[in-house]
Image (cartoon, rainbow, N blue to C red):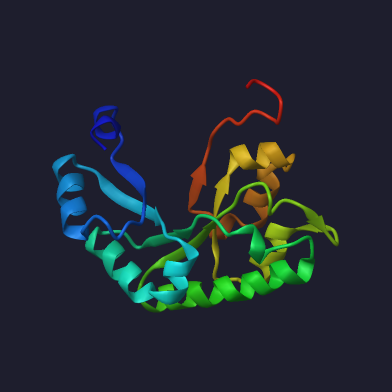
Length: 173
């Protein structure tokens, strides 16, 4: 965190960890004049202990919670599966909203498969209208998807972006 502050950043996106008490992390962030702007929280925590995850983030001054990853056992190449995930994640988004937090999904490339004329990610987001999107341009590049299409379609739901380069498989190792 010290290096991040030294190069001039004022906010960080964190990863949830029960191993560090929120008050200890808050003291470190405050000492470096950093704020926690959002945090990646695993699905099991979101579904099984959401109140504590939200309390932890609020103690840091953060109200944006992101689902960073889903295991491959949860999805397949079927539009209905992605729609069901959208409904499942929408319930988390509604529970976050009820406690004054925003919920977002951080995608990778596995959500970018065409299923019935729409990406799996689109099926998920269209089925879950409360889910925000943290758009990742690097993963869009890997999947061959134009991030501007997603930015245009979900502009009102994108308040965070990962803007990065990412080489295609086998290139620029």
